[in-house]
Image 1 (tube, rainbow, N blue to C red):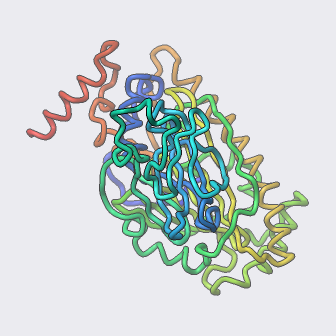
Image 2 (cartoon, rainbow, N blue to C red):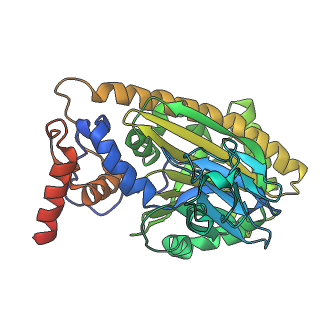
Image 3 (cartoon, rainbow, N blue to C red):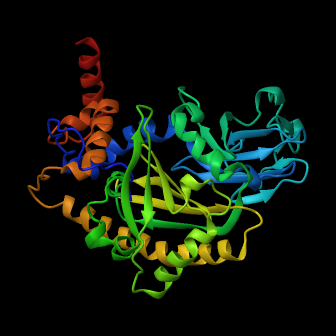
Length: 400
């Protein structure tokens, strides 16, 4: 569900949607992984997940794995989750390293700051230089308590990307939040862009999500930044739903807004970061929608929830109702996206026009073309030629 699809947007020349081949091509997927995941900030968790020295949270972000750990000096650091010896994954999920980080394969041991402490039977490694064999540290940024990492590249800090919209996170007190439900990871049989296209428009809500249609009304409070961050708000409808859980949510919603300033009462606030991350702020909790690319036609969808550490009775009930309402919405999106992925393989299919309700998809597709020029082609290059054709087109664009 997107937040910035104002149908009264200024008219502009229609943007041609991406060609179907771009949603199914394995060679292109490799280029996308580099452009949209390795070189972009990826959400990992919240500072409350790592409160004490040795506490860590590990995440898969595709073929790569990362973890954030709190050191004995109480500083947070992020590392690639791979042992320097034989590439074993070292940690998984949420946990605690008691004093050191130890690889479960051969026992190579690292300090909490990532430096290599010891190699078992070190006499058999006469050329090993411990000082040069520490874990690979990567960039870490803490944004209102939320943990982001970037494996490659550079660019603005997370706060710079959010700009003035950062104020929302302060008003909700997100830096104080704690995890309030276990994460849910689902594998959808779709290309990551299919799932993100779906997230970027509300045109499908009246047909695809009857619960949201009964609950929400849109307003014109939205913005989209050149950084790729967009945000907007929805309001809870005054008309009571005819579904018990939805009606109860409506009735309790305003009673769960007591921590918020008046201008946020009765609203849901949503954020999108181009490509793979949605953040929803409700009075009762924050939820995460994250796409993790697995292959050209497979994506893991990660859901996570954080909220105030001392919720009121109203907030506790609203959290339960929130999941009861939104989890079926997630299931509906999976079904809708699966239908699209199957349809994209149809012989000679060509996409129809995008409406003004889908303007955010148009902007996303333009971003894909800008970062990966080969996606501007109507048909896929010959097998094995996608990367070289992309390089040629990028060189040509740079020289023009």
